Length: 252
View 1 (cartoon, one colour):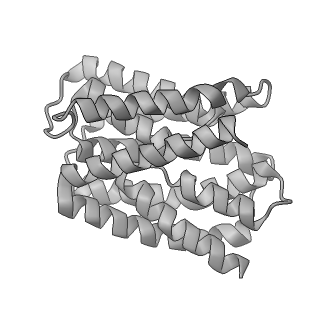
View 2 (cartoon, rainbow, N blue to C red; view 1 turned 30 degrees about the vertical axis):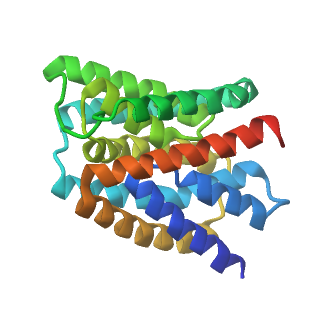
């Protein structure tokens, strides 16, 4: 029964994550509810071990249909990989608890800004080119990569928002770009969890298959319905993140 529960959660997480990020909002609580006595690091490692496959497949699917500005995205992915490992190391030294109370308000600001700017992310008009775009993209990778390793909730949504706001991508292209960077940050964190022995491979194998299936479906819907659909899902996921992180910070 445990396999069924976590596989269904992984399927749904892969579906949501492929569209706009936020799969951890589904899969991590499902793992904690199913295995309440397990070490948290093992559950986080198992989550990463399954979700990285769906994120990687989504990146490949998007790259076939969406303009991927590779010259800027590879530096962003590399910066995210390095920064995520640094963040994961730092969290072993100091607690990220100070972020818990701030995060719901940061997410609320992101949502309100997106709602206020009706045209934000509706058209794909990159603001920079060449070295300038590479530097801004790498800065996004460093900032959010470090955050992903150190704390994590909302990583995909923050990536999408910053690619839209700072680089002028539409929501569909920003989601595609975010998948590449998120794959790199997940890989870095996963390497750390594996090195510490915090992963359940017997669950990862089954969950990865389910996550990829959900990812394929989510990517297909995003590509079919375009940037307006991704924008709506983005707002829904950010709203859910505000509720979840607000509950964790102030009510739990």
